[in-house]
Amino acid sequence: MKNRMVGALATSAALALVLTSCAESQRDDDTPADDGATGTEDAGGETGGESSDATFVFGAAGAPTTFDPFYASDGETFRVTRQIFQNLIGIEEGGTEAVPELATEWTPSEDGLVWDFAIQEGVQFHDGTDLDAEAVCANFDRWADQNEAGQSPSGAYYYGNDFGFGEDTLFESCEATDDLTAQVTVTRATGKFPMVLSQSSYAIQSPTAMEEYDANGIALEGEAFVFPEYATSHPTGTGPFTFEAYDNAGGTVTLARNEEFWGEPAGVASLVFKIIPDENARRQELEAGTIQGYDLPNPVDWQALEDGGNQVLIRDPFNILYLALNPVADPQLEDPLVRQALYHALNREQLVSSQLPEGAAVATQFMPDTVSGWSADIAPYEYDVEKAKSLLEEAGKSDLTIELWYPSEVTRPYMPDPSRIYDAVKADWEAAGITVEPVTKPWAGGYIDGTQASQAPAFFLGWTGDLNSADNFLCAFFCGDDNQFGTSAHDWHGDLQDQIAAADAEPDEAARTALYEELNTAIMSPEWLPGLPLSHSPPAIVVAENVQGLVQSPLTAEDFSTVTITE
Image (cartoon, rainbow, N blue to C red; front, side, top):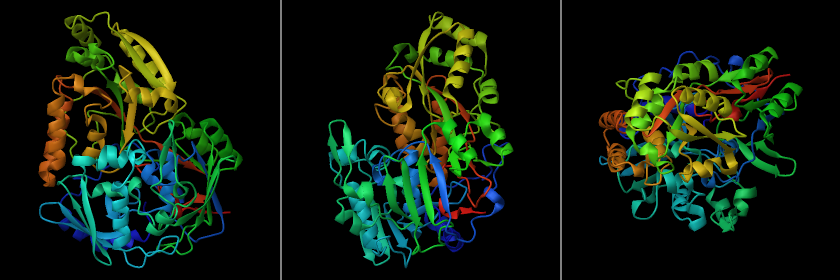
C-alpha cells in the first residue's frame, strides 16, 4: 500500500535503490502501454486534502474471505486489507515501480542471497507495538511456519507462487542485526526478490496481535477453511485505517481513521465497504448517493456515468486477457497446427475495437509492454481465415469440434463482458469451419476450479500484474507440471520450465531481461504457442462528483487514505 509520506522518502532513497538493488525490476520506458487511455488524472486533480469527519462508502463486488492478507488471493479481500496494512516495499502512487514503505532501503550481498532492510523509525502498529527488525522477522518466520491448511491453497501466493516450501523454499532466515535492520537470507538468487514483498499477501502485521489471537491457527473442516480470531476480528497493521467491524448479515466492513498513523492522516474518518454483488445494483446505488464509488464499471456505462456527474477514472492497462488451450483436456490441442489454426482464425483487431473499451490494445505476448522482458521482435499472428482452414486440413482436423468455456456472474478488469467475448470468438471460429460447443459456469461456482483442474479445452482467463515483473506473469501461467495450460502434455514442457527457472535465477538485470525476451519469443513460436494472448484493456474505477484525491492504480491497488469528501 502507498501512503503520502513515502513520496518524501522516495527522493532521498531512489539513488540508493538503483545502486544497491540489483534484483529490482526497472523499465526502459515509463510510457503507458497505450496512450489512448484517458482519465489519468486523479479524482478532482488533487492528491487528498484536509482530513474531515466524513465517511467514504465504497461498493464492493464481494465480501472479503479473511482479514489476514497472508491467507488471501482475491481482489476484494486485498482491497480492504490494503487500507489496514503496509509492506516493507510499496508501489509508486499511480504506477508499478517499487518505492520505500516500511523499509527505507534494501541492500543485497554481491551474490544476491543476503538482503539488509533498513526499517522506518518511529512507526507503531495499531495496538501500540513498535515496528522494528524483530517484528519484521516475526512476520517472515510466521509466513514460513504454516500448518497444512495454511500452506495450500490458503497461502497460495507464498507457497504456490513466490516462496515455495520444503526443499524448494526460497526463504532461509531472517535476523535482526540491530533494532532497525532486518537481514533476510534467501536460498537462491531470484529476480522476484525483494520486489515480491510489495504484494498485499506480505503485509507486515503486529507480532503481538498475531500471538494473542492465534494468527496461524487456520484449520480445514470438511471443504471449508476456518480462520482464527486474528483473521476474523483483530487484523493489526501500521496503515492509515484500523479495523472496526464486519457486519456479515448487513454486508458491510467498517474501518476507522488511524489517528496515530506515522504518515499523513487519512482524509476521511470512516471507510465503509458495502458489499453489492450485482454490478447494476452498484451503479444504481452510486446514482442514488448511497455509495460514493465502485470498481470495474461496465465500459458501456462509462459515458452515462460521466453524464450523471460521476468521475470515471481509467487506469493504464497492466493486464492480459488470453484464451488458454489445454491438451490435457483435449488431446487434439497437442498438434501445433491446430493451435496455430485457432489463432489465425481470430480477428483480434475487431474483437478489441468492438468488445473492449477505448485504449485497449491487441496483445502479442503474455505480458504488457511496460514489463521488462517484453519482446519487440514478436510479430502479431495475422488474421487469415483461409490459412486457418488450410492448417486444419493439413492436421486432418477440417471438422474440428472444440469446447469453449467462458465465465458467468463476473466482471474482470481484462474481461468486462465474458459472454460478448465468447460470442465474438465463436463467430470467428465458426467462419473457419470449427464447431464450437459452449460451456459456461459461475466464476466462483466451478469455472476457476474447472479450468485449474484441466477440465476445459479452451477457456478465457486473464491476469492483472501484482508487480512489474516478468516472472509475475509468466510463472503464474506456465510454472509447474499442473499449470492451467496443460503444457506437461507437450514435448517442450521441460524446456519451458528450464527457461523460466533460468531467467528468474539470473542476478544481472540486463541479462535477465534478455532471457525473458527470448522466453517470450519461444512461447509465441508456432511450435509452442500454448495459448492465445488476446488483449490488454484499461479498466476503470468510478467515484461520485464530491470525491477528491483518489489516484487510480494500474495494479487496481488503490489507496483510499488520500480520499476526501467535499460538500
